[in-house]
Amino acid sequence: MFRLPFLVLVALVVAFGGGIWSTLVALDATTGFGAIRLGAWEAFPQAQTADADPYAKAHRANGGRLLYGTAEGLSFTASVDQTGQRLSGRCTYLLSGQTPVARAWTLFAATVKGAAPLTGQDLPVALNSRTVLRDATGAFIITLSPDASAGNWLAVPRDGPFYLTLTLLDTPTAGSSGLIDLAMPRIDRIGCAHA
Image (cartoon, rainbow, N blue to C red; front, side, top):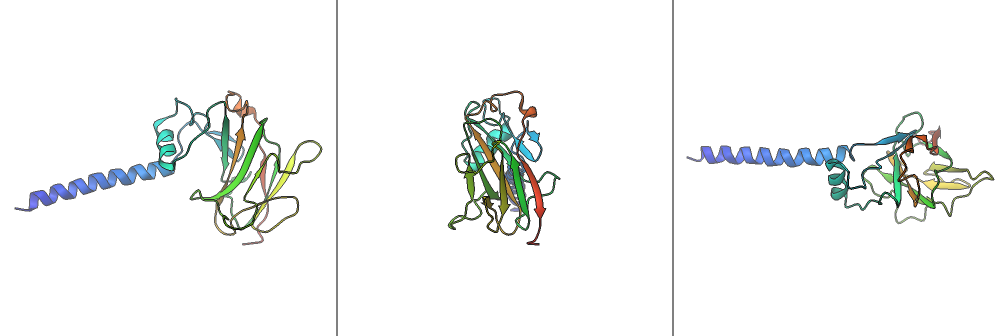
């Protein structure tokens, strides 16, 4: 008597539960299609346009993010160094070079879950184009480490992986089809004393 309704209920739970689970996995697995890789940096220039693919739109809606318009800016993320190894708080890195032409830029480190790693502490968790120290050519060197360092220093989480987000604001790069020719800052690992 209750066998048929029970089997229908089990089928519905499996179908809806499996569908919701697979959707959440797909949203966490990708930001969308059309990624452009420049060294360790990755950007999705189409993610903020009307032509964005459904995965990019869903990822943006799920994260509650507002993306910049094509003429406003472009965000690059890096989760690996120049050799392709995962960024880790147990290591120290040097971010060096210049950014592509932009009116302003921001750089911050975040945990894999997307949270700022050191909120509530008086540590430099973000840098921008106005606060970074440069040499005579306009290049900069930023130390990425959980321990304080002289010069430009960006605090990263002491343990576990992290990623960097470099956002170029009011840049001709965002509307350019020549993104492949851009020179992005290098991320070089200089040691893992915290291992």
